[in-house]
Length: 352
View 1 (cartoon, helix red, strand yellow):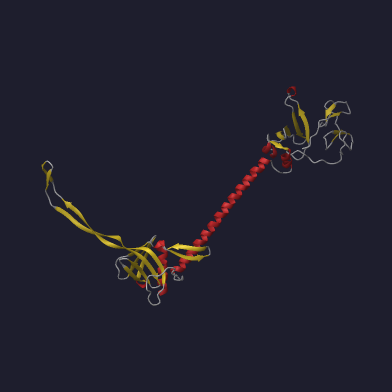
View 2: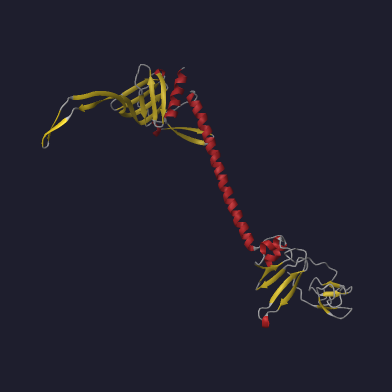
């Protein structure tokens, strides 16, 4: 921001003193043939090649220094305050009329001709340092604006990082679901070789292999429960204080219904030929070929087999997991009813 001192130019026609930025004489209107010094701003008359004030070359072009329009030049002037108090140093652009008021070591843009000027709209009445205005003139921004841009950029980076992390998690989850669906499809069709990682408590038959061992499984079955409905009926007569007599007779009936009850607790074993439950009080041995239906639950299955009227329930199987490796990595599936049903159906499919 170059500062030009106000100089008076004498009119060659009438001798009137005019400001050095005047193009015509204030007294007679004669055009003032002025060449302004790019160094000090002095208006030189005639065909001078060097400034009459500072001796600088008048033939070298000077870059505009107004940060508001980047076209005009700034001229310094002093506005006197009352009784010499409150003097103001201002700089006025020769092109856009921008006025910069000096405030300590800063400069405030207080006026401009075109109010839609983007520099005016963004920085009007904001005291900025010389370095800030120089940066703005070169297409940059103020310190405050740069801090705001940096904050927004940082926020965008954080948001983009979160979005990227979310997309990665979603991609992993989608791949995991594809792995599970593919595994389940293979399992139910008998294309998975199930290997037992626990010690089998049974003595296998010929060509029999243990696939899954599930501990702490409950065995449940429907049991009939009988209940008596009805009681003594008839009118009641009071014969003395605290003593009454009821006429009539007893009318009651007995009904029964089934309730699913826990029978035993033990270990459930799936082999390539059988489904076996070993409990403290009861053992259940189911030939896979005899199973006609399997109902899956969140915590186990209900099994129906030939020559067995009541459904046999096995719950607590979800506490055991079936592990496999997919494209998304190592996956552990709880043996809920759906997974256990698929494993049993896969073994039945292998039996042919």
